Amino acid sequence: MSKARLEAFSDGVFAVIITIMVLNLKVPSEVTFAALNSVYPTFLTYILSFIYIGIYWNNHHHLLHASQKVNGGILWANLHLLFWLSLAPFATGWLGQNPRAAAPVAIYGAVLLFAGVAYYILEQSLIRHHGKESTLAASLGKDRKGLLSLAIYSVGIGMAFVQPLISCALYVLVAVIWLCPDPRIERNIQA
Image 1 (cartoon, rainbow, N blue to C red):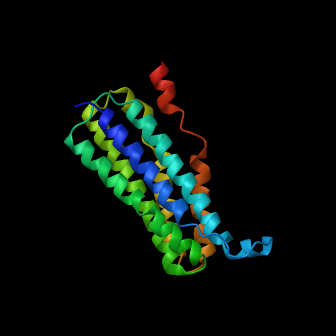
Image 2: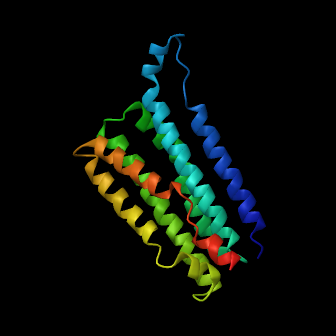
């Protein structure tokens, strides 16, 4: 089955997620710079979440670019990923309003963790479908960066109950790790 419909649907969901997140930003009622102090945690959380959605969109694009076809299992694995990413606006809003509270910080991390797990499942589904000798499998390798990210998210969730700001720093760290696009897929496709 063609992957075009999967790509188009996924791109639409990514766009809607970003739109919902930006609609959650509230404009201060006062017209002074000091009024921005009340919204800066929400704005910073929005920036982090926007970066995460952008990272997932970028990597999802590369992942599907290296794929030739999809099947029903891959469609479900993709929906699983989109489900967790669709919770980003909720987690972003809650964390933005409560950046030092354990529960919102842990829930934000859980959304990141489960989105990461879902992405890994999607990768493995595509590799199974295309074969272990495929360009996709060769490009991804053991995906150490992805597995490291899952470990950091897990530590961040636990740290939310000890020191929430350390958790937030760990979530930022994972985003920084992924800011540079993973060149493995492009390099293998061009070769």
